[in-house]
Amino acid sequence: MGAAALLASTGAATLPSLAQDPIGASFVENFDKLDRSRWYISDGWSNGDHQNCVWSKNQVSVANGVLKLGFAKQTLKDRNHVCGEIQTNARFGYGTFEVRMKAVAGSGLNTGFFTYIGPTHGQPHDEIDFEVLGKDPSKVQLNQYVNAKSVGSAALVDVPGGAAKGFHDYAFVWEKERIRWYVDGKLVGEATDPAKIPSHPSKIYMSLWGSDILKSWMGAFVEPAGPVAAEIERVAYTAPGDACQFPESVACKLK
Image 1: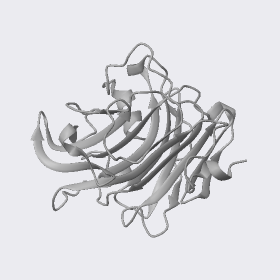
Image 2 (image 1 turned 30 degrees about the horizontal axis):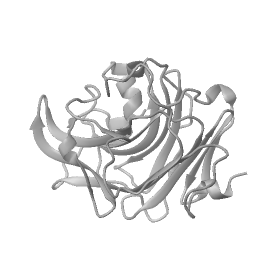
Image 3 (image 1 turned 135 degrees about the vertical axis):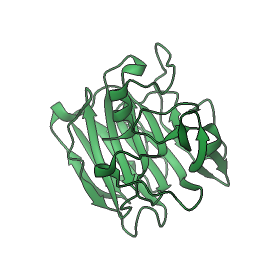
């Protein structure tokens, strides 16, 4: 279960959404700056009792072409930690979603790249996930939700060299009747049952968060020795039919 799925189950809000968010076009974000017309910084709340940190804008920074999403010990509101998340202002439909990131190791921590839409946006809960569970960052978990139900396999697939030891490329291609997940350009997962494919345009999220209570999934929380941060070098969305936007993009070799 992803952070957004837990958010939907608790009814917590991520963002006071417009009645009709714009539908986004193809883009590549290299984080020369944090473009606030594209990105919204989550700040001042948590997604539910499962989360041991409060989203804080101070845990989101951009420098030298790298976005950092932090996690640190700091009392804020009713939690003992702060953490970082950004999400797009726009929603995105079918297409290719890609991120180049370095995740965080540590039991009880979760580094995520996913699409989500739900009741807080006036829509059914749909979601497509990449999540690195810090208890074993040698792997990344794949999953999807349709109408608030986990309909994926929650498969764990290998990340060559480890998701927390270097930057890796994660991509999923979302089509009406299929999802394909890729790690470093290699196909690692596929969903082909149309009943198990999300259908509502969704926002793109990246986050780092922790939990004291989701031990069976994320492992027992272990306090990091100091502040830690996930690092993201690139995020991209390529709409169906558009040209691929950078040489490493899986959109360059899709059929």
